[in-house]
Length: 187
Image (cartoon, rainbow, N blue to C red; front, side, top):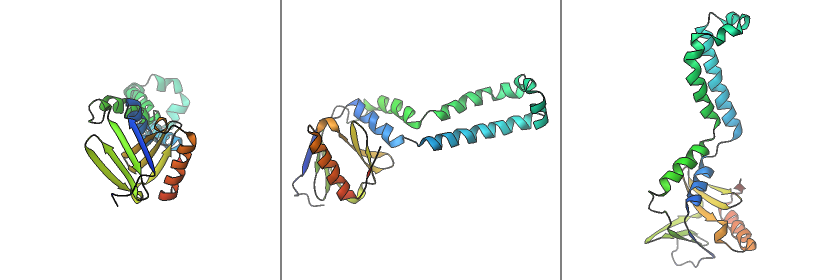
């Protein structure tokens, strides 16, 4: 990438805990259908386990109250409760862990500058500079407060809307990035 390209847009902001947590949530968000399928599969397997512990499906259908008093149910109770954790989105766990990891990261409270050029992105943090060509951006994630440029499964550049004062400038920036990457934004 040509280092001498002048930036078309320059974004400056101080990284906050909320920025880091929002990135973690955006990168770990799982579709609702996948969560439901995962929970249904888990509870289906657990039910099959209970069937094998009983004397067959006839016993469960004939005397459901006996299943409630069955030792197999009490043995499976922790597994039933553990399955409830599958219903929580991974972004929930990610947000908790991301918030805790923020303070230990070398970027907490850092001043970040992102120059958007025709050739890609130049990000400067403290004494480090990184360059990203447009083909490296794999996905654009837009939320009411952020635009994330996903670079890998676990990495994304953060563009907070608060760093761009005018809504028209923000729309121009998003349009330029969409044109350069050929990607549309996902919410």
